[in-house]
Length: 111
Image (cartoon, rainbow, N blue to C red):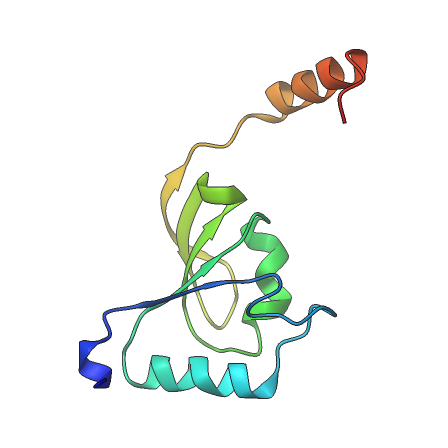
């Protein structure tokens, strides 16, 4: 398959991009850098938040799109600072709602 036929590459972070010790293997880093060098967009998906990915993104030096919180936040980061460059979706619960959900779960003995 020609690289020109590839429109984007989406990768799950935990257990796929990172190994079981949460480390980025050199071969994976090189492959992602090659994609960026060929102007192929990289999309990273995780249940974690964008800030939790800073340590992962820093050595990559690219600006991937990120799908976080299991799809509740979608945006692009700046490869150099790892800060949000653009956010296209943010439908997370407020902290007040999150605390209420946790309190109710605890009252009902739901783990």
